[in-house]
Image (tube, rainbow over all chains, first blue to last red):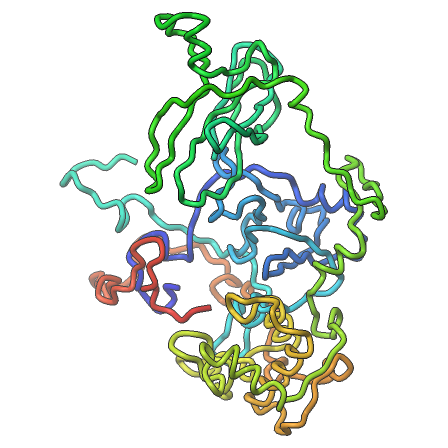
Length: 161
Length: 332
C-alpha cells in the first residue's frame, strides 16, 4: 500500500500488514493424509471466501507440507478476530492466503481462479499484463523501534532495543 | 472465557464453568494434556447477551478435590483457615462489561454420575463410515454434507448448478439487490467496487479494474456473487437469480449486447472475458534487480545530500485504530 510513496505513518502499514507471533497447530499435510488426499491433488482450496494454491504434499517443503492449521497464537486459543477456531498459517506467502475462520479444505487438480486470486491479489504491470499467483514474499524488513508509534522519548543518547 | 485451573494432585479434568450463578454447569474445554501439578488453561465459548451474569472458574472431577462454595469451606475450616481457599470463584459481569469479584449462594454439589455426558449419537438413518487414515480421526463426510459445502466453481464450469437466467431477468434483481452499492450501471457508489466499464484503462496511472476490463474468468463472478453477495445477505439469491445477474453484468460490460441473452449451465464456459490473455505467471525473478543478483551497495550509494521527498503526515490517511475507515483506498 506504500507503492506510491510514504502514505501511512506506522510500521504496521509500510509493507502490508505485518505480524510476528508464534502459532501452534497441526500440519495440514497430516490432515490431508488422514482424509485420503488423491495424488493428482495440486491445489488447495481453503474456504471461507478464498482459495489458495500449491502442491499440497510437496515433499520439499515449499507446498502445503509447511502449512499449519493453527488453533493458538502465542500460546492462547485464537481470538475471533485472529480466526477462531482455526486458521491457516502459510509461512512466507501472502497474508491473503492465511485464511481465518477456516471451515473447509478442498484439494483439486486445477486452480479455481476465485476472486481473491484474479480480481484481487494479482499484480497489474505498466504494460497492461498482470502477474498472477505471486504468492511468495519478496525480501522485506521494517524497523519497529523507533517507528512512528515508538518514538525516542529520552533525548539524545544511546538507544537499546 | 478462559482461565487457569490447577491442583497439586494428579489426573484432573476441568469440569465446567457456569453462567447463571452456579445452577447449571457447562463443560469447559481444557487445553492440552492433563499433567501432574501443572496449571491448565481452560476455555468456554459463550455469547454474552449484554445482561449481567456470573461466571465461575473450573472445578475438578474428583470429588475430593472439587472446588466448593466458600460457604462450604467456611463450615469445614472456619473463617481463619485462609491459605487453602479452593472456593468456587465467581465474577459478576455487569451490564456495562465491568467485572466484580462476588460471592453467590451455595451451588448444588456435583456428583460423579453427572460428569459423564453421553456423546451425541448420529441419527439412526445416517451411514457413518470411519476414517481410514493413520490416526483414525473423524469419519467420512456424508454426500449430503459435501454437497452443502461444495459450492466452488472453476473457469471450465466445474461446479456450476443447474439453472439459467437472462439479461432482462437480471436487471430488476440487480436494481433491487446490488445497485445501492455498485451503482445503477455498475459504476460504483461511493467507494464500493466498480463492476463495469474501465476498458482500455489498464495502462493508466489509475486503472479501473472491473469485470469487463480486468477479470479473466466469468466463473469468478458467478462463484463470488453466489457465495458472498448481496453483502450482509449472502446465499439469499436462487441459482437462477445468480445466472440472471451474471448475464446482466456481462451486458453492463458490453460483453453481450442482447437483453434476451440467456446464460445457463450449458453455455456458461463458452463465454470468455476480454482480458483473459493478459494474465501471466509470476516472473518476478526475471526483473533486472533480481536477475542480475548483484551485491547491494553499502557506501556512497547516491549522489548529493539525502532529501525527504514525501511525508506520510502530509497525506494523513493513517488508520488510528479499530474501525477507522480512514484508510484512503476503496473498499475491497
